[in-house]
Length: 562
Image (tube, helix red, strand yellow):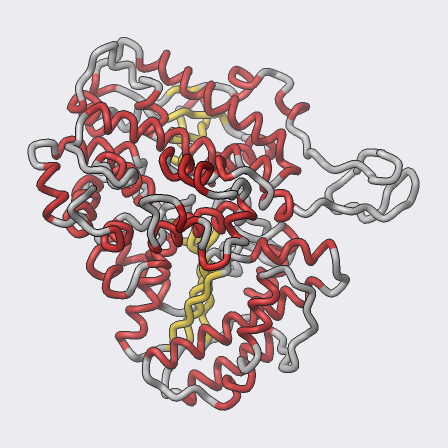
């Protein structure tokens, strides 16, 4: 066993910032110059959308902005987490007023967040806010449990809440109210997403500044919401090719890892840089690989080695691919897009393997480029790959008469795991680090999508819509309400209810934790974990204490959100 206790270790390697305390967040977070610029926008006026793939640090920045606004004492900060939103999705198949109930859920969570923030700042909670939130907690809990509920007595609208927030902010002697909406527009079904952005539009004024975390590729904006006009898009993703990138990642290690663990890395510092580059700028992935390198994930203590680092990177590459492939279950209408996306990823890696073969270490490429214009179907596939972090938009470049190309950097862990850098059969960690840090920034491999996917890819790239339950006729669009053949009303399957029946093997569990759950409990599905009150069954597994049991539950909750 490690010399560091389970609660401390679990906090040190906690991947999600919303579960860290204020002190832990301040002590363990390395803030770059780019982060400081982003924080300034999050704390300032105007509507903002914080965009980045899973694990890029959106929650960290939102939580940091929340605490900094509180400490500065000039404005009211309201942090709201909507991670349980998909649990409301079955209501849309059961009740006619689901959209109105969903709207109340969104608004009342903001009101509760405002009351909590005022209490944390030791300010008086206005009577109107007390009245609005008197029964809000019970309503929200019932909604998130999937229960069919009545409208709350204190029914409110976005406009009413906007005016109320303005009044409460003024009564508290504060100038502005900043709404920090985490896990907001990416965890909802498309219908919920569109409704959320209608609410978001209405919660803006000179005094109220809404901010929301979104994903690239899978967020559905409402017809009236125009990104760039309604809200500024702010990127959240460290760039691994920045000059100070490794310095920042090393600082995360020095801040986060206790001396007892750092001692084991003495003389093997190159492994830190190796994992940092392989994380592709995603802090969550970096922390997971680092914990695996040090033996923390399996509750063991061992010295870090190259082979352990290679395994951590291979596992991380597999995890990134799993995030993407899971979209076929979470967004079933895009199942064929996901299938083609997998082909595109594999084809891109083969293309880079060929391109890099025989090139010296300073001229390796990590970027694939497609000729402009890019059609809408390919654009959707690329955006979904970006959501998972498999690729990253490296912007357009002109090559004169050769044309204009849209460039995408491929995740470094995928390139390392498949030896797509063309480093030969036997290469050192130093060789990989050199290839990724001293490569030619202008080198990229040009390829047409048809060369990777086949000329018929556009015909294969169609929405996978459920047929009519009555006559079996295909749907002509995802928005169709009635069958064009028999006239019956069309129904949609509940994504949430299908996800909770998934086997626990689909969760991000270590082999030992998964084996322990299967051997010592009756837990077999994600729903079994969610239904395990107080984590009683999970705690039966040897070496799983209160912190790890809570983490396993969070893995299940995260699985049933996009």
